[in-house]
Length: 557
Ligand code: ADP
Image 1 (tube, protein in one colour):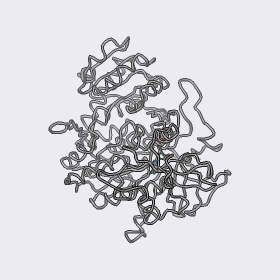
Image 2 (cartoon, rainbow, N blue to C red; image 1 turned 30 degrees about the horizontal axis):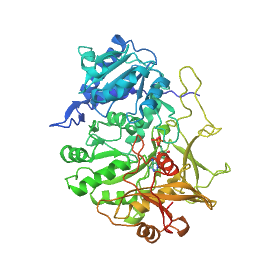
Image 3 (spheres, rainbow, N blue to C red; image 1 turned 135 degrees about the horizontal axis):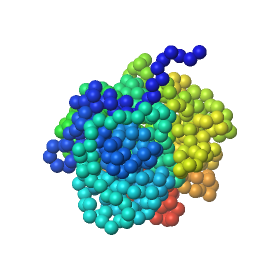
Image 4 (cartoon, rainbow, N blue to C red; image 1 turned 90 degrees about the horizontal axis):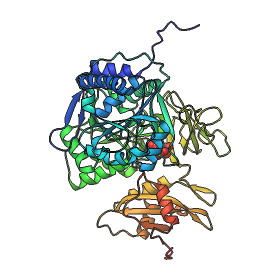
């Protein structure tokens, strides 16, 4: 028997219409680097999204599932594109502006983008790429930047964003689409190989946004202002633009001002209540706030994800009154997979802290299982470690494989019964909390035992003299692999390797056989395009002899 319920598709246009009417006075606040930030209400965003859709359809002939790319910072115009493009039935393709140019060109060609909406400040990146972009016919430019860079770049037509949308109707008859249709696409940042295209549907984004808004996840309301540091090109800014339009949360957008000093100023002057970014951003902010204290008392909730949150960072933020909420996810999971809010019956700071340090608990719609090396299912006992596999309505079931091609389902990424193999290794407790010990490819396999690189890094980063630390596996004749610790020392610090090694054993409770013997001081840990430790680069630098490595028996390697 079928239900008697209305079969209403879950569409992005619904989120836009709701946000721009019911929460019309909520604002997108964009940092401009000088004076007062720019403010635009949700109603204005809705009007301008309709104007943009008219311009794309009528002037640029965007139709069907044409891909419209954005090369942009987090700002109001980017939010307009977020809503206009999928709502009209086209596909939003957010481009990661930190990727190497040749990878960016590969991605644009692979997705066959017809239009690129770009911020003027990014034209120095875009202009030299254009001759290599085979399918791009139009570039639409918004915000400050030198337009002359685009002169003579071939057949591409260049438009001014504001001129293009000016005078267009502020309403649009959004089509009733199939909710399973493509709404947006995002390529993985390639930490683990070639970028892979993930295509989100209207339905997946809608359901994911509802989860983001649940109290067990971010739980924000129209009394909140969220500082969205995580880029809009990094898994849809973790779903925040959509989620905020559902609930009227104000968005504070940093545009290109992502350095610690302007972020601190944004927090002090605009008083956000929530913020979201990867750990490296917060490490930078912490150093800034230590050097120059500011009033950050408004910011009571900070969502950290993208890589493991070091306990020392969580502690330091707690002391500043900014409560960290740890979350795990991937491009393939939209990204919200788990959020670490301790269960209600957990009392006492230590017990609570232990829960908060896990990657978190799975929501209803994310089913999880652990698979051992032989393919066996492992128990949720908090001890059995295996590869995490997930399944759910906002989890990818395949990768985009180019125009007209069947989607890709590589066997190392998807199980035979359709689950996503995350490549993350960890345990799950009986009450459903995930603790990741490593990425499968970052685990150090020493003499048949596994050493967690993340555990060593976290212990090292809790030393007062250590600013950053990354640990990678390096080949070893006797053990197969051993850990190499690369350390960034704080300015003026005199800590030596012996001291750090002793600290790992004493304070970090690291087993003796897991302690690294190879050590190297580095100026900075190389970062990926989304700000994670780039262990691929460290491994390569080691292999090519570029690192000055000491081993603690005194031998210089
Ligand atoms: P990339 O795979 O290119 O780094 P993603 O942003 O999709 O791009 O990264 C997803 C991966 O990031 C996860 O598979 C996991 O390894 C890591 N990750 C995300 N959140 C966390 C977290 N809270 N703790 C540890 N690792 C995390």
